[in-house]
Length: 299
Image 1 (tube, rainbow, N blue to C red):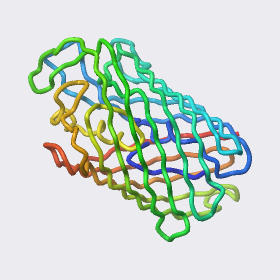
Image 2: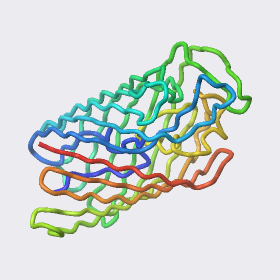
Image 3: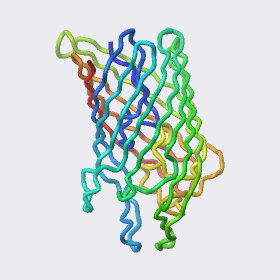
C-alpha cells in the first residue's frame, strides 16, 4: 500500500519540500526508515545590495531522513540547499523534528510534532525569528471526502538579524527580534488508487485537496501550513522588511488547491505536486502556482 501522503498548503519548504518535514507516518505496524529528496523553489534576496532587495525564486534541493517506530513515534532530520548561489552559502536550513502519529484507526488519524529550525545567517534567505514550530492535525477518514484540521504555531528569537525595508530600499540595521505566528487550516481531500499500471507491483495514487488557511503573517517562515506565503512572487509587496511582514491580525489568509501524483514501485515513491493559491489578504490578491517533486525510498 502507498504510504499516506499529506497535501496541504504545506509541503518539500519550500519546495519546500512538502514532504521533507512531514510527520513520520505510523500507517503500518512495522518500524521503517525513509530517505527522501525534494526539489522546489524558495525566495532569496541580495542582502549585500540595498538597491536590489526584491525577492526572487531560487531552485533548491532538500534531502532528508526519517525514522518511524511502529508505536507511532518518529524522528526526522532535513536540510535544504540552494542550487544557485553566488556566495557559495548553499546550505541554508536544517530541521530536526520529533513526532507522534496515531494512524491505527480506520475512522480517524491524528498526530503532533515539534520542529527546531537552524538557519544559515549568511545565506540569501530572508531572516526570521520563527525557529520553533508546534504542529498538530486531526482527520476523519471514514467519509467519501476526508475533512481535516491543522494547527500550527511558530515562535522564536533571532539575534543580529540583517533587516531591510523592501519599500524604502534601505537597510534598517542589525536587530534582535522575537515573535510568533499562528495558523489554522481546514482541508477537504479525496484520493483514488490504480494498481498494476506498468508492472504487477506498481500503484498510482491521485489526490486532490482544497485548503482554507487562516492566521497571522508577522514573519517570513517555513511552517507546515504556511509555506505558500513565501512562494508568492508578490510577497515583497506586503513586506516591511526582510524579516517582518504586515500581518499581525488573525484573519483568512489564503484558499489553496493541490493535485498530487504518488507513483509507487517496490520501495520507491515518486511524488510530483502542483499547488495554486488564492490570497485572501494583503495588497496583492493575484493567484499563483508552484510545482514541487519528491523522491522517497523506504526500508
